Structure formats: structure tokens, C-alpha cells
Image (cartoon, rainbow over all chains, first blue to last red; front, top):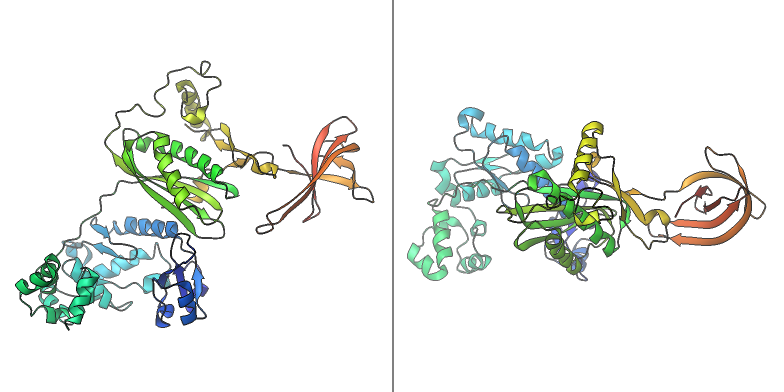
Length: 399
Length: 93
């Protein structure tokens, strides 16, 4: 939808990550009709659909869009549960008197999406309303764009009768076995006694029956995700050198750690991402072995992940996100440990985070007066570049 | 992963950015006079060194012919002739 002209063509997204044998990750409706399926090799997909347009994935953009969508939907209800890309559950219990009948509630939710997505995408959104997440999911899956399906509690069992067993959120092997046993719908599944389903499929069999008979109603669980701390750095020209990216990563982790929102908390998870030259994005995640507020302990695992799965193209913007936080760190804050005066600290490498309090105070005062920090530090961008303006740059100094 | 709005993103400010200058050349395309903005035109006394950079043909091609020159007042500057658009620049570094 970022490229509307693609709306009338067969499009497939390549799987994220660089590999010699790349596969298909997502396909458009037209490509699906031509037989292209996720997981196929590119050569297979192209042989099935010669007019197929292959695109690099942009996971950073998708995550940003999902985050914005979740934020917008919380205006409707505080109970919002993301369930993977493209699917979200909203808890609407008790909101009838506020927003009106179920069709009005759905309409209201879809209207909110116009603030995030282009209209054709909102128009293509399928919505369903039923008691519990499974019911709502099946209702949405059976709905057509623009015609939401609403299933009241008393009709839930009859609604499930013709629903294929493939809709059950159980192991695909269980579904395969059910189909081999000629059990294709939830209505057929319901006829079996619980004991025999448990004997055949264990816990999965019990759960499947509970969903099929509408005995199991899973409530929507609101996500409890701390607001991540995000920082980014835009390069004047796309950067491909690993050393340059490592240097920028250090600067960004320092900046993220110095954010007031981080103070008093240690970091347990971080993400490094990039917007790539000529479109697309890349990212790596890391869960830290122990909570920390030290730059090196956060940057080192990200560097290792980057070495394993490097960005496939030159980087235009580098992003760092502190995603998970732990208990307040017992360590001293990164910028709070020095009481050295500016004079005594002359010659210090401030990039190590040892910013003297006097300098910090001076910058704070200048920011109050001017609205921004007028101090910069010189950073190496690509010191061995043959092009002089690529070698060094100024980065705003704002401890 | 949501980046901050574009206007608020910190950006690296490259050092040693080239500045456009007016250069008069002779029939062999060698600079004879240089006028740096805000300063009077100077005659080129001697060309000390010369080198060429051709790079990034896959992106936006860079093709520059650099010269370190000494002006008639003794100032040493580095000039380059951008072979992609024919303009001249002075550059530090």
C-alpha cells in the first residue's frame, strides 16, 4: 500500500534475512490465486506466476505500523491484544452502552484504522465479533471485507458446526490427523467423546473439543509491554562498513541509556535495526543474560548478532531500541558516577560515558537558553574513506 | 520498531563538506585563477599534487579530479573538479 500501483499486480515478499536460497514469506491475493504460497522457493514461485513482483521485506516498517495501530485502538478499549502481524483482538465487554450495538462497535474500530492505514487496506480488513478469542477469530476469518460477522453467544455452537478443523489453534499435525480420520468440521469433531479425543491427541484433543463446543471462551488479555526507549541515527550517506556501524551502535546505546525514562531501570532486552538503502529494513534482537545498564554489555551481544546476520544492504538509518527492562540496577547510573570537575577531566574520552557533572550542567543550561544543545563531538564515520567528507562528522553532544 | 519523527532524528553532520568555487582554466583545463566566495580572486602559482577518485558507480557515481594548489599569496588549498557535472569545489581534509 506504500506503492499503490502494486495493488493490481501479483506481489510476494521475500523471507527476511540473507540467504542463498531465499523463500517466499507473504503473498498477495492475486499471487495466491496463481498458486504462490509462503515457504516456496523463489524459483518455484516465479515459475508458477511469471508476472510476480518480488519485494524485500521491511519488518521495521511493519512493526512501527502495528505499534501505531495498537496505540490508536487503545482509544476504543484498554484491552488490546496483538496476536502476530495482521491480527489483533479487542476486549469489548461492557462497552455496549458507550459505543452502541456490536456493528457500531466494529465500525468504530475500523474507522480508527483510517488514521494508521490507507483506505484500501482498511477496506480489505476483515472483522468478526464473538465471545472469546477463538470465536472472534473464526468469525473474522469467515467474514468478507466490509461485511463483518457478528456471532452472539447463543449462536456460537451452531456457527462452529461448519467451521473447518484447520481453524483450531492446535498443532498442525493434530489437524492433519483429524482430516485423515475424515473429521473436517468442528461439528463432526463435537460428536466424539472427550475421552477418545484425549486418548488420541492428549491435551490438544481436550482443548479442541472445548473450543468446538464453545465451552472454552478465552478472554482477551491486554498486553503489558513497557514503552520501549528508541533512538536512531541517520547517516549522511548509506554506510556499509561494519566498524562504522559498531561505532554508531555504541553512540546510540549510550544515548538510549542516558534517557530519563531509563534511569533507575536496568535493561534486559534490546533490538538493533536499520532502514536500508533503496528500501527495506533489517533488525536483530537480543535478550541479555543478566540485567545491566552498561553500554558494552548491551552492545556486545547486538554486535555478535549482527555478525551472524548482517544487514543485506548499506544502512541509511540505524536504530536502537531498549525493549525490556529489569529491576532497578544496583550499579551506579552511567552518567552519575563522576564528580570530577571539567578541568580535571580534560582529555577524557567522553565517548566512554564519563561525562563530568560540570559539563552536563553547562549543556543543560545552554539547552534551556537555546532550546537545543549547541555542543557537538567529532565522531569517526568512515576514517579510511577516499572521499574526505565521509571520514568524520559532528554528532550532537547531549549527555 | 518505530523511528522517531524525521525532524527529531539526530543526524550526523559531515565534516569537510566541499564548497563551490569559481575557477578559470586554461586550454588544458588546468586552473589558472580561483575565487573562493567572500574572498578576492587569486592566481594559481603552482599545482603541487594531483589525484583522481572514481567510486560508487552502483549508487550515485562519484568522479573527482583533485589538485593541491598553491595560490599567489602562499595559501595552499585542495580543489577538485567534479567530472560528473563540471563544477569546481574547494575541500578541506
